[in-house]
Length: 173
Image (tube, rainbow, N blue to C red; front, side, top):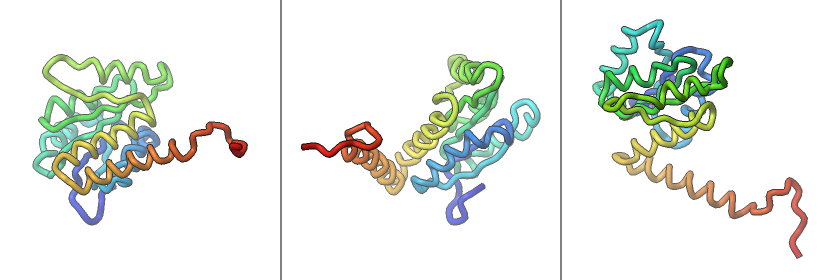
C-alpha cells in the first residue's frame, strides 16, 4: 500500500502477512496524520537479501523512518537498523507462545551501537509507532507537525468534554 499522491516518507514493514492486523494500526495513524507510507512484508529469516536491499535503499527512495513489526524471534527491526542510518521503530507483535514478551525482549535488547526505538506490544505499539514516525517526519514538514498537534488537541478536548467515566452519566445539578 502506498499513497497515490506523494512519495512515501515512512516504510511500514512486517515479518509476515499475519502481522498485518497489528501493523495496519500504524498505517491508519500515518494516514490520519497525512504521512505517505509504503507497506511490505520483509522477512528477516525467509528473505534476508530483500531485507538488506530494502533497508540499504530506504533513504535513497526518500524514506525518513522505518516501522518494523515482528513476532517471535523478532529480528526484523534490529536487522533493518543494522543496514540503515534512518530511525527504526520496532513493534513487537503478539506471539501465541509467550503473548509477545518474546518479541518485546528480542526488539528492545539491542546491543549498544544499533538503536531501535521499541514500542508496546500489539495494537497500541503500532498506533504509537505511526504517531512517533509522524512526529519524526514533522521535524522537517510543518504540515505533518500541525496534524500531530491537532491530533493531540483533539485527544485533550475529548477528555475534557467527557469527564464523567460512566456510560450513561446523570445530569449534574
